[in-house]
Length: 433
Image 1 (cartoon, rainbow, N blue to C red):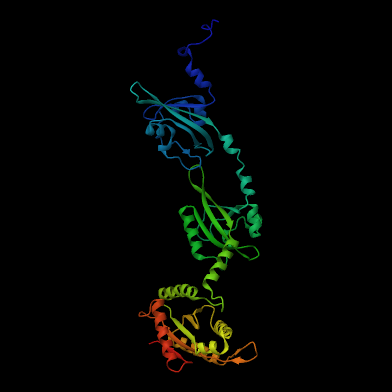
Image 2 (cartoon, one colour):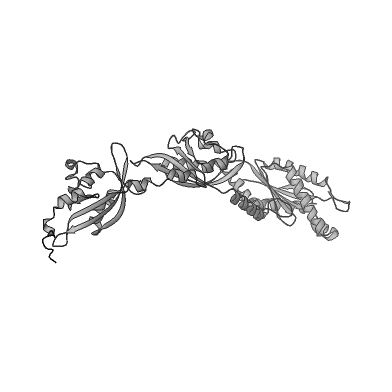
């Protein structure tokens, strides 16, 4: 079969006509990245005229491209520059082409290939790209967010100071968690969710991240419309426009209230004396260290009292360990009702207890502890068989000062005073020098 008359030789093909009819954009760059050729589809996608395109280099500051995450694409990541730098082809790079007049974005899938001379040196770089804007826009992000199981909040970017940026959008999960409808919170500050026990340090870290236009992950205590506390793990990310400017913040919240409650239970088990319900040695030490650091930082008074039940071994030997346990519970109960919520009460082991008194001088602590000593002596324990058991305690008190600046030193001084009280007749309060 004769076919030579119907086959067009390669050299006879009108390359320009072929390129001009392609649905894909094609740009040919010289070794200095200058544009040598761009077909009509490329000019359309790049929003350039032929006059504007020819000679334009990939270093031109007027180019504005984005990566697939809408971040400004660095010049060195342009397809032609990647080919020249790597000396190899680049395939399937997603790029956003920004219209400088409207800020609209056209998304393209780009491929770039080197053309070499007889010495193997790159003489040209051919970049082809197809429009995938439709595919990018077909993803129903708003519907995904609306029906997401985690709460999502979108705010404006400014103002960060003062009441902070206003809420512009919340999804259904936000309403389910907080009780607030969109109408109730849109236009309000997210601080509407915060309350008395929201950690000010967490709030400060979030505020600084907003100022820095940086993402942040934080655990924070919020409040529902009805005033109920709930914990969320909060991830805030800045949202940028085509010019790379932060225009909004998006907050994704994950409810961790149950997790926090479980952590609290475990922490209480680890830091609470199971018999008396007051802090154990570990819990007392942790809280005392914090109060001590605060007193030293702020220059406040602070005292520590060590309390030991007199003749506790005799109580155990005479009445049994069950009664000894009742005596410990009785003492702990009197301690809880005799001191302020700001005071720290703990059982350090056996029959030894401690009370940390922030803001109290040595003299004030002496009065408080002597009052407690007398109350204990005047309040016998009623046993299960109806009998009454009276007992007393010896107490040593030490005051925070430069010589006793740490918890260990303060405890040692109070222990020495307690030892002196024990060896001076018991049922008394001794002060450390």
